[in-house]
Image 1 (cartoon, one colour):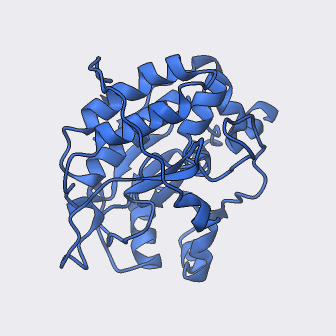
Image 2: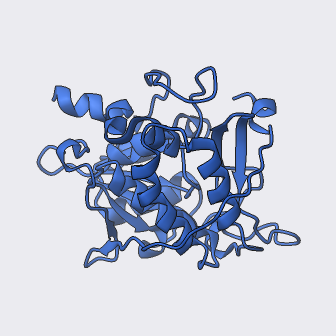
Length: 285
């Protein structure tokens, strides 16, 4: 992605009015069950009898649609936040599209002299949620689905403003956005499973403990993932392909594919699930 374009700044000064907060359900095993908002288009691959697909990925702040496409293909998504926090990564930032170009929204975190801290120990440094909401409101106030999406999204920012850990903010948005998109996937944490080894061995240990038959991974893991290790335990590895998502109508000039999924919600409303890869497969099944 063009990082120069992503760094174009845009500042706003709009009100942050109070409203209600969104409640989340919790399954008996501690995993989050995200009830569908778009009930008529609830997504998720229907597993064959005995199949369990799992993804194990670090949390990200209001991720792009590819992240939710991956979640929608799973039976269970494990938030993998016991691993090291990386600066200038997606853990605490993402992009929206504004009249001035693509703009970063970054959650300020305490990282100085904390070089090896895991994501689930990262603390938020200062108030940030009101500023982010103001930027979002200014960027999308002319979007076709601004009112309906704002009524869903603004309470999340009000709730997020009370959280102190980055991982809790990310989980809040991941579960709520999955719910909004109609995904049926259970969301759990790596703390629910034993931590054994590193890299491939650690991922495999979670898959085995979770009873997975398939492991879904992003393409960047091809550099280190040992597929043969998974195959030895009867677990099939499936790779995500992010190359063929359809374009959609956006505000503010030429199409930008790598922005947060909230861009789709503001511009497409209830049609958003149709622009996730897992939706097109589910309707063809």
